[in-house]
Length: 293
Length: 317
Picture 1 (cartoon, rainbow over the protein chains, first blue to last red):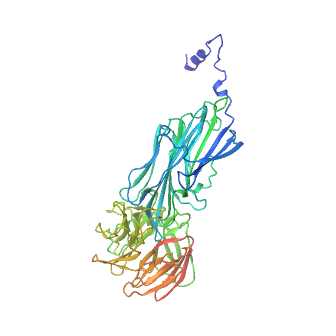
Picture 2: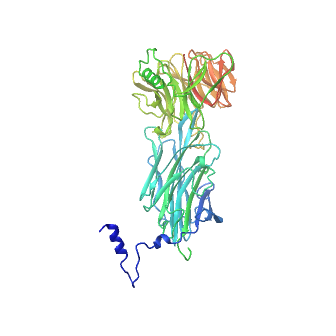
């Protein structure tokens, strides 16, 4: 007997109270109603520094076809409440060495905890002097590494989650390099860019640990964002393959996110500090609980 | 034809650099996205290796320019070229392409590619200047100590020997704009020290002000006031130095007699091989090329490029 025929017989065996499932019956899993709405969220940090910044949260509820059902916005202090140790997830960007002319700036933290989503991203700006000289002027380079993600709870399931970094200029391109991870999501991964000048270059390693499922993507253009800084932007995100037609057991209830790095170059005389850069995140989730989340 | 010319170019680069019989040749890669519009009047004669921007800030590439007839040829597809220096048999650049980590590295044109200088290896360097005997002067940023130090270095590709000629003191600014003098000296600009609140965030303000540092062939050195607190380029001719400054002008400085002249709205590019005429670019756009006779210091336009030029080295025809 061929394998296919054997399977038909097995599926036709009566089960329970004389109820039979013919092999040709429709699949109750595949036939379940798709999720009819997603919440797409753009998080943005704005402020003079990470500790006093404001977190802008722009939410849009859409259908799988992208029709907008509602929009809402709220703001909150970026670092309030502080992240407790037991809430922190293992992700960071670290430089492998220090050297003169290289500067590690304060970390910017994006944290938003609701009943359903635990959102936590971190942004690490670095700079280096005299990386290049052109037209009689030295240049400075800035590297921004971002890592983090979202852990969905109470019936919420994540379908997109990832950080965005950019230099806040819509008119001139300053970005010279970028890196993100593409492909099947590993349990943990690292991306690396660096300041290569000299025999002992500084490398910045951004890492994240997450549940190995679905895919990682990246682009200069971020999901749901207006991408006004697109020419100077880099985004990386985790995405569930069910999109745009997801069912309630799709998405992820585990921590999911990504890590990106972008490298920028400016004339040395340009006055720059970490507030000139854009720290954002894209998140999409839906409620899998038929009674609401 | 392109392949044959590429081979000729490669052979020229591998020859005896002191013989003077072999020349660096353009590879005629393609005309490129940059063109030159000639203007009526006398034109500079020779070959001109130039770094020109064809598009965005990452589109700076190496070209060979000729004024008679007006021609521009792209020499390499590699982008993010920062500066160029050349002799008869070598074209040396600093370029910050992705393969070298986006930071300036000293490289040599071989065919249509940039490769590390043989014997020297991959070196993060700035401001190359190639002397008539093909020795390469460049500046180096030493980041290994507690404070950044800049060095003026030299590399002899024939002997495959190099050494450091000058090193800044703690707190000094960077060294840029190396230029060969008429008697084998090398001059370099010591930039002003960086302000402590600048974005690079590193250096205190206690360093010495900007200066032209002259290193003689016997190893001795001296300093000259550049005539501006903000020098942005240096070219040393037969009898005068040309210094660009942040005020968008060229200062002509007699290093021995102290004579000074100023030409407004132009920035220096390169002296003629004899050191008697100065090629300049307009400060506003960087696209208009002019010629200055130090005896009558005003610029005469000789051509217009479609993209801004960032560096140029003038060789005999």
